[in-house]
Amino acid sequence: MFTRTKLLQIALVLFGVVFCLVYPLAIVWPSGWAWHVGAPYESDYFMMIVGVYATLGVFLVLAARNPYANLSLIWFTVASSVVHAAIMAAQSMHGEDHMGHLMGDVPALLLVAVVLGALAASPEKK
Image (cartoon, rainbow, N blue to C red; front, top):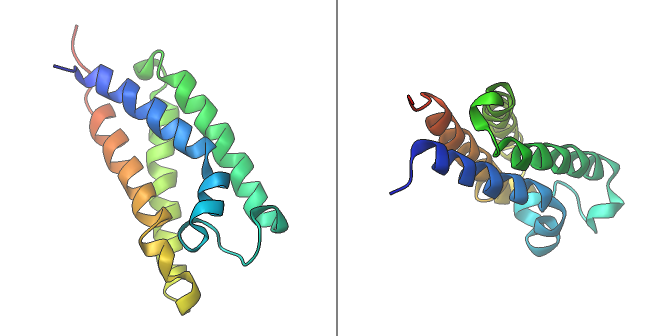
């Protein structure tokens, strides 16, 4: 059976890798991950988001080595994911061309927040 710490480590690596894959996700499923028409590289905004999330992804993978020493990064990821998902959910309601986000990146970010928040909420006692 996995301990809470081991599950948190697995979640950090998994979500970190997914954050590093935002660009390919936008190629495979643009209506769920990209907020523009055309190739991902055609949007300066999207490339900025790719850079920010890839950087966060690398740091989440690194945080998996010692999650409880990196709680501020984990809680930043939880809080920023909720805020980002809420803003995207509201924005996706303003036009039919963004409704795919309600099935793509919005629930993905909420999943990140719930899983990391639940696992990081109470560290295991040694």
